[in-house]
Structure formats: structure tokens, C-alpha cells
Length: 169
Image 1 (tube, helix red, strand yellow):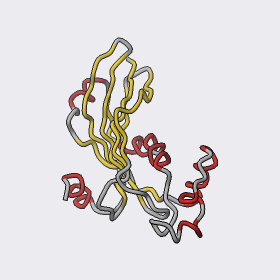
Image 2 (cartoon, helix red, strand yellow):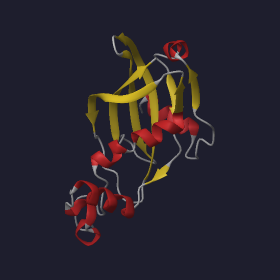
Image 3 (cartoon, one colour):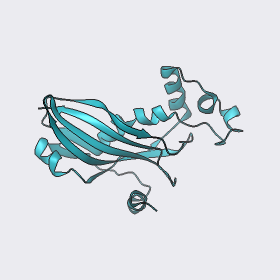
């Protein structure tokens, strides 16, 4: 069992039920580098959400949108698109942390993204965030975080991504 799984079990399957951790400016962000910030609430992945994502992206592969065919497929049901899970990071992340004291923040990119496990329809997922580095650039501060999306009751994460955010003072 990994450290993340042990911590997940210690927190139980219930929602976090608290406000996001607030960081007031660069000093508080810097002080938290190397720490796990917390978890989002659990979010159910519905077929309606999967279908809406398929419509938005044009990815109508049967494994995502055809419950009858998917029932006989490798997962026994439809699964969320990996990029759907990735697209939920801003919503899940906002439940975990709130960074203030900057004129603007933008998603600057991703260093690495992996989808170790499929997310079956009806599953519940949540995200956990660890702040990994803070670098001063001419355009502002670049914050790198490792975000892990867990599947409730799963033994492997659905997503592990190193995200990069540019924070302009």
C-alpha cells in the first residue's frame, strides 16, 4: 500500500466537508512547498457528464458512450475519458486550495500526466494536491504541484499529473 493510499484510508470515504486551504501571497505558498495540502470532496462520474464531454470534444468512442456495447467490453461498463478526468482538475483543485494576493493566475501547463486506472461510470473520484516547487520567473511565480485523482475503493489512481500554474504579482 502506498503512502497516498494509507492517507486516503485514514481520511475515510466521506467528503472533506471543509473550506479550501487559503494561501495569502507568495510567502505562505513557499512555506507549503513539499507538503500535501489536502483532498477535494468526492465527485460522482455520471454517464451524463461523460456524454457531455464526448459532445464537447467529438470523442464518441463506444467505451465511453455506448453502455450496451461497453457492458461486454473490458470494463463491463462505460468509462470516463482520461481527458475528462484531467479537465476536472480546476474544479477539484478549487475545493482544496485558494491562493490569494496575485493579480492573476493561469494554468501554464503540465509536466507529466498519467492515467493509471480507468474511471467506470458511477465511480466517485477525488483529488489530492502536493505543492512540489515554486520558481521565480520574469513573468511571475511558477508553482508546480502533483495532483493525484483517486477512485473510491480503487487500488490505483485514475490520474497523476504534475501541473504548472503561473502566478503574477
